[in-house]
Length: 111
Image (cartoon, rainbow, N blue to C red; front, top):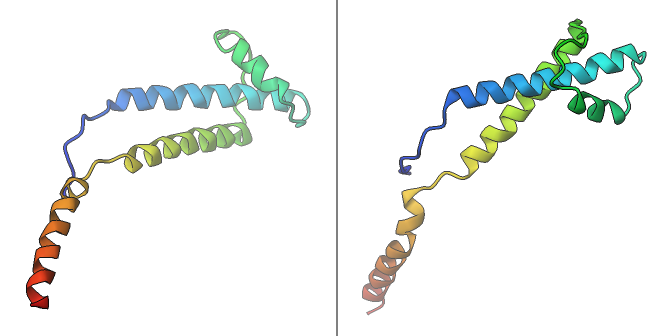
């Protein structure tokens, strides 16, 4: 199966997206830790509203870091799955020509 050339995406864009998602989830898990481990949907909006404030404390515990890494890697995997799904193959364009060729072959055998 031949694959058409596609424009390559920059790896820096993926790294920046990974770091932003990692930082955002780290902020959310820090708020959860300060709330004695009780999750609330309000933490997502609080973290998003205060994402630009660098002076807010962040807790780098192993649980927070692994959760942030897991979510960021999952987001990258979803992106890669979407990107690999939309590849264009040359075989898709030549399918109709091969069907016409097969029909001529069958006509010769029937006679």
